[in-house]
Image (cartoon, rainbow, N blue to C red):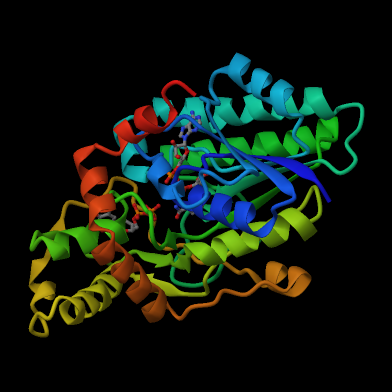
Length: 351
Ligand code: NAD
Ligand code: TYD
């Protein structure tokens, strides 16, 4: 079946894995990647598919209503997979406004455009909103987030994502927009911007710099390999039911400090350092304000209803990730120096 699908935020970490998967696996689809290319968007993540016939890039700011309307007029999408967002909790604490603009207003602009284009015929249309488990707030030592857990976001990031989830559900309920949501736990893997814990730690260990561990390192996250998230998105996009929510998680809870120690051991091996060398870089720093203690997802609905399951063991996924960062040194250097921003001008000026 032919489809024209808008993927927003396709130059970011998770988005690039989703775009590559869809462009490669579904040559009959046209995949339009709309991305503003903020500091987190990097077209170098997409070089392997950028010349494919079924791929198009549009530099679009989803906060700009008119640009979003023009995009929908140009392509007549029948599906949307919406990943574009400001995504880093620490940045949302330092400067929340951009999170309100992109995550809330940007999502509403997309919903309005989809509603206006689709309202006479919702058949075969789908608006798929990608969200986070952080909307559920923080768990104590016990329990898991299910699709029924009440929303209780605690950071400006999670509050903005929760808001956007509510708007997606409201457009589904009130206007009939065929929409669904998935809420995923922490992702890790290749192409993640080195401000997030795992790539930041890999880079610091490589350069013999302190590894900043917030508070006592006792916060717990449920880590999922990014390609497993992309496979879940593929499955949910094709087989999920409009109006539903699906939780996605790795069933893989780690205390931050235990994760860092495992990473240090892998790095010692990869860098031929004596056992214990990298652990000496661990440095406890001031905690993040309002730091959520624990996230953990119950993904049994997705597993039972759609037959999804994650693939690599954490140690294997982490090793793959370390290998990627140690091999792709140019990518990392260019991201750290800001040079990747120039790629757009080189590739797209005059197009
Ligand atoms: P990311 O920060 O790596 O990438 C975000 C992308 O969105 C970038 O390419 C950026 O340029 C683009 N973008 C930002 N503002 C935009 C705007 N106004 N208009 C158009 N494009 C814009 O984020 P990520 O980690 O890949 O996360 C993708 C989505 O998945 C987000 O919605 C996030 O909330 C969600 N999510 C992330 C995780 C995780 O662990 N990273 C977990 C669960 C859910
Ligand atoms: P992060 O990768 O920012 O994801 P999130 O806050 O969305 O879960 O952080 C993961 C965990 O690691 C979180 O508990 C905060 C902690 N952390 C550190 O201890 N040090 C760091 O330098 C960073 C970036 C995060």
